[in-house]
Length: 217
Image 1 (cartoon, one colour):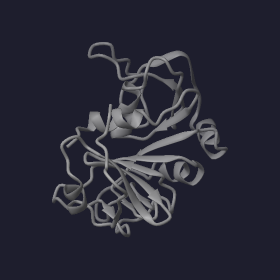
Image 2 (cartoon, one colour):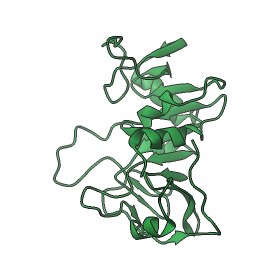
Image 3 (cartoon, one colour):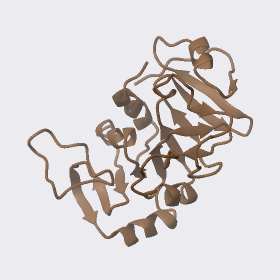
Image 4 (tube, helix red, strand yellow):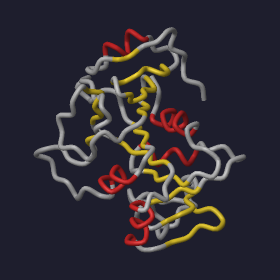
């Protein structure tokens, strides 16, 4: 099974030259660490940063430079800073080419639940609802099962929804899944993980065509 770092590394292969990319909190923030040096990408954070770089090395942190998850970040040459209203204007006007989010659940029709667990204290919904309502290309980085071993890849979400029918692809510690009109299609499997193990860990039905290749990094 993949580590969170490896999930981010696999998702970095979906980032193309010239993209403007929003990184949600959690695993998505790690993606900036793995983008190849030979492509130009602008990472955006909804708290008002365009041009984020990888995480700083220990000792090089600047407490005034943070992302939406309040983690210290670096910035690349040409980075800019602005208020949240301007930032969400970029998001709502669809200036962002790719959005990478974490999730608690994703359903087979592309619904996402990532902001609230009933009975738990929530600081706020954050920018996820604006992102899923505006973005045309959403990739979810998440763990395939919860701490109890129960699938988070579902036929229908059980938690309050963040967005409906918006997710295009999901990358977990077990697999890469594409959301199609007929449900989840299994595209790749983690090294050493069998198709049978993925099926067993998935509550939703999987569409499987031919031999499923292992992920490459």
